[in-house]
Image 1 (tube, rainbow, N blue to C red):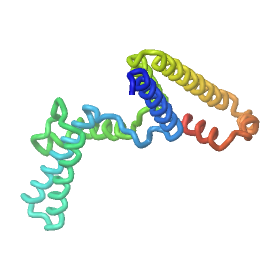
Image 2: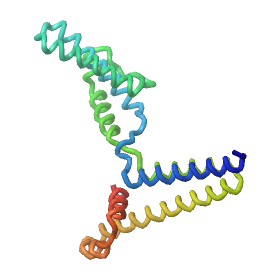
Image 3: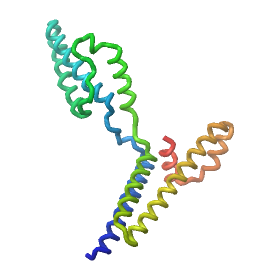
Length: 204
C-alpha cells in the first residue's frame, strides 16, 4: 500500500470513528462515563478506610458481639477497594483519633464527595473534544485526504454547535412561555423517533 492510500485510509477511519463516537455521546449521553476522582473524593475514600479501621478496632476493644466485630472487619477490608480505586490524596485529612474522624470537616468532606460523585461529563463537551482530536489528527496526516477530513470534521462540529444552540433556545422559549408549551409540542409532533431520542438526550 502506497503512503497516499494509507493516509486516505487513516483519514477515513478517523472520521468514521469520531463521528460515530460523537453521535453515541450525543444520543446516549454520558451516564456511563465518570469524571476522574477529585482530591476531595480521594480524601473521603482514604478517610472512609480510616473510619472503618477505627470502627473495627473499637469493636474488638469493646468486646461487642461477634457479628458486629465481623461486620466492622469486613467493612475495613471493603473500604480498601475504594481507596485503591480513587487513588491516594495529596493531603491527608486528620484521622488519628475517633474525635478527628468525627469532626465537622469529615462530615463536610463526605457531603462534598457525595455531590461530586454524581457529576457526569457533559455530552456536548465530550463530543466536541472528540471532534477536535480528530481535526488535529487529520491535520497531522496532511495531504488532500487529511484536508478533506479536517473540513468534514469542522463542518460536523459546527452543525453540532448549531443543533445545541437550537435545542437550548427551544428549552428557553418553553420556560419563558409556559402557556405555549402545548402548541410548541404540537408543532414538533411529526418528528421521527430518532430525532425525538436525540433531542431528549441533548436536554438531559
